[in-house]
Amino acid sequence: MVVETREHSALARLGRGETVRVGDTAVLTDAPATARLFFPEPGVPRLRYGFHARPFLALDATTRLGRSARAGGLLLDAFVAWRPSDLPLVLSAQFEPVGFGLGTGLRHTPGSAYVAAAYSTDFLEVGLGFGAQFGQKECLPALDPETYLAIEGKNVCASNAGPSVQQVLRLGALDGFHIGWSSSILSRENQFRFGSGRGEIQVPLTPSLSLFGAGGGAASGWNFGELGVRSFLKGTGGAGTTVFSASLGIVSLSDGTGSPLTGPSVSIGIERRP
Image 1 (cartoon, rainbow, N blue to C red):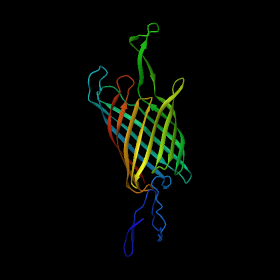
Image 2 (tube, helix red, strand yellow):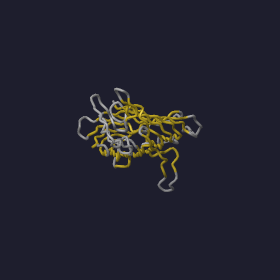
Image 3 (cartoon, rainbow, N blue to C red):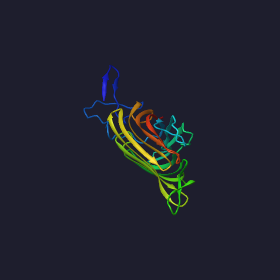
Image 4 (cartoon, rainbow, N blue to C red):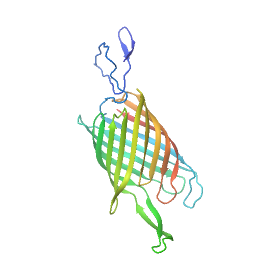
């Protein structure tokens, strides 16, 4: 859309997914604007990478001995996604997410990571991958088989870490309205079980601003929920785009033995598309 004209040039505002390259030509027309807010068609970016960090302060945190503690932590996403050719194929690697807890003397380091290959188009992405979950063992007091009372000093521990099978799904435009889902199946010593699940919904508000909500959890001990906004700091979705995210939410990290670290978070994220 042309917003200013000069003697030998003009200034135009580009919508989501619209790009201009050196050598492109323009013609005068009375046709309606082509940019679409909810379903833009920028194509799948060649390369995307970024992070989303959720620092938090834990409320009512205690040590293993039950003493009060000033504690906090960080839940971090980091990813890279690459489209190697003009085929609708995207290869990705992701920490989704990894957590760090401090201040109680206990380890709180649950996380998930995977690599995946996906069929990806403007309005659909579906794929499979392999990964791993990591964290501490989940320990519960052993019970007496006759009285069903806890046996003092004896615990039964089970690991929620191990290899996993990953599923990824996006319905809708990456930079427009979309619903995203990612989940994993965890392989334990003698069985398969639910590993992790997280979802996201994004709703565009203006040509450069979107509202999103996301949340999820895993057997390894991380959980979160958030509501935030995304904005184009640079570009409109194609190459050269920088996307900034900010959100408010709640984060919980568990080590499987003591009380979980839970508290409000104020998070930020950056995505680059060179």
